[in-house]
Amino acid sequence: GSNEPSLDNFWMPFTANRQFKAAPRMLASAKGMYFEDTDGRKILDGTAGLWCVNAGHGRERIADAVHRQLSHLDFAPSFQMGHPIAFEFARRLGDIAPAGLDRVFFTSSGSESVETALKIAIAYQRAIGQGTRTRLIGRERGYHGVGFGGLSVGGILNNRRVYPLLPGADHLRHTHDLDRNAFSKGQPEHGVELADDLEGLVALHGAETIAAVIVEPVAGSTGVLVPPRGYLERLQSIARKHGILLIFDEVITGFGRLGTPFATEYFGVEPDLVSTAKGLTNGAVPMGAVFASRKIHDALMTGPDHVIELFHGYTYSGHPVACAAGLATLDIYQEEGLLRRAGHLATEWREAIHGLRDLPHVIDIRTVGLIAGIELQSRADAIGTRAYEVFVRAFDKGVLTRVTGDIIALSPPLIIETGQIDQIVSTLHDVLIEIL
Ligand code: PMP
Image 1 (cartoon, rainbow, N blue to C red):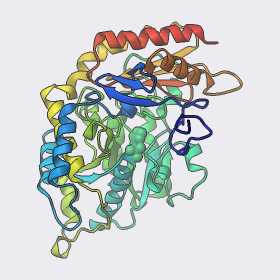
Image 2: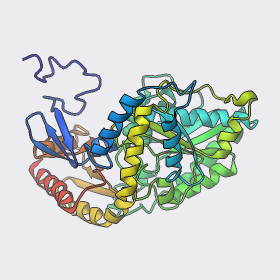
Image 3: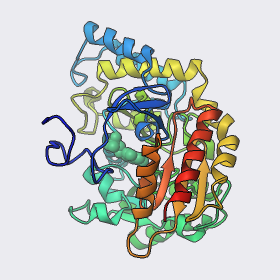
């Protein structure tokens, strides 16, 4: 019938079916660590949705909170009026927020959080008399969503190709290319000195033109690229020295992915702004949040009548239903110790995933917290086709992975148990032996 999924009658081709090029597979429902597809097959979720569902799928507590909030107060315009649950959620986030960043700006997605952080950085510089600082610096192979700011600081050339970008945006080199195929068991050895690229850009453009530098602490979308030890600290000290704000994009690493609430703690770095989304509401309702220091907040709030020096805000900022989902999510994270659990599992995870290192095609494996990147040798004629084949075959054997180029990325829900780690590894083991 016309509701059968096929490419001919697929009405939302812009977003769906990006990965299955032939016949789209459909996920019908989800509980805990598993999806169920439209054929009733159980699929182990090796990706936490898209790095979202840290507490596992189908949490009744979140569903109940959303339902209750919808009947209680379904919408309130945050621009004009407050509502208690948004303040309550912001206050509760303060309990786990990155050190020193106890002011929250709510958004509805990772892309919106990035745009928000970039705009706050520029507005802050202006508020402290540094109005010439409008340039934004990103990093090669960084992914910061699909807004014009995020695209401009993003480091994926193909994504930037079509669109006009923010004037002056520039990029640090990425450390990854120096340590390819290293099978690093933790942080790689090489590349810490590439943080000095920021000194180079200061010399080139002048510090007085640069508002902020934004990095993913661990680059997720471009294949799980972990920075060398000391790199992020060095970047922070160079940025500070020159009055440049440091922004961590923690859309992926936030909310326990590395075994700490945020990557700031994992790496011992204190950025000025942190962008988040995904795990904030366990993926259940679209929401993002930007964490800022009180210093930044206060500088922006000194205008007459406390009118913020920043034209910014969304219809859905602090949406009551999203806040309800977020509060329930936070309750679960805290009661079940999930924001630290990846740290307890990290050794087991690393050893299990590194068990794949001697299989055909595998040229590098990188793990950190509950993330893994398994890099395959690309076929001579077609980059990405080998990992894509692994993705399809693993799905057909009941495990959802994610591929980016010829890298298989894993980021399971933080509730994963040993048996499920084994299922992921043995499925990938079988598939890697099968394929050419
Ligand atoms: N920043 C990072 C680091 C991300 O990984 C993503 C999404 N994968 C985004 C921003 C954009 O988030 P969204 O898709 O929710 O707009």
